[in-house]
Image (cartoon, rainbow, N blue to C red; front, side, top):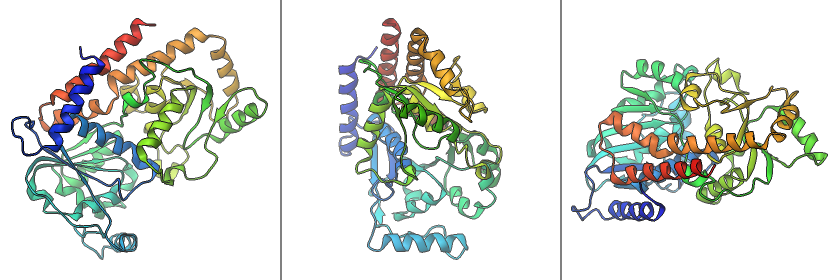
Length: 396
């Protein structure tokens, strides 16, 4: 079993290998090229994918290609979207980024795209298809109902050998459109950032809500907070996802530190208040993993879908309350009188996430599909996560 000092040493060694391309003796067998949009797209909803990229960089031989905007990018980008929507521009057009030329060949290119518009940005890399033996696109959000309307844009995915999507219900329809291998790859999280172990802090926040919310539950909790019945943290501004953090790592650290100090974390299915987009497709979002990995008790609604049953197979993964908020305070009161149950639910959530839902587990799943051997650093990270989970169980 790998302890913390051994894991940190291995992770540092991986970073050295990733940056030292001339030393063939320590270079892993697989070389990976990862374009990143972190200098262009800085909204909060992009941060989770940058976190995923960072874990891959820490555990593999990765060249992170940080694409940069050229002069006039914002104007060119807007016009490119309009022209593409009207089918008046080629899918291969650079939307106004500084051109990049790869200096050597790679075994794999992994393009992580939050949505289909991000696909255009890869065009800044000249002849990327020719320089990469296997091309993979990981598409974070695409609903099945969007496929027909976006078929022209989605044709850009045909350049890739494999396409991975976060939404289980989208895999089949997308594979039929593209005639390409499409795979389900669920959302993940940097559990080392979010986990309360090995030194759990006091949970001084009673309830935490971030992002989309059920208004009935929110109003009940606002009233309770105004009467000093509980400490409730929630968004007080619109369009959180569109806000731009000063530093995405600091943003994720702040979020994780608050979640680790939270007792009850509100969750609901992805886009639960956008039925026109869902059209009956139920999916889980990042909130379930963020709250659970932090060891908070998830309170809200179970996502009634195959993905939720696969990812959260343990009992009481979510303490359910009605969306109208009518039983919220009653359910919280039931939990408060049973601190041992709260502690058990908290520990189980955090432990299960360490064992199942770290980004390294998602990269493993992708590598298995691509028949790529895991790096020693990936295996070391998995072992270290397991050692944290084992220690937490022993201390219970």
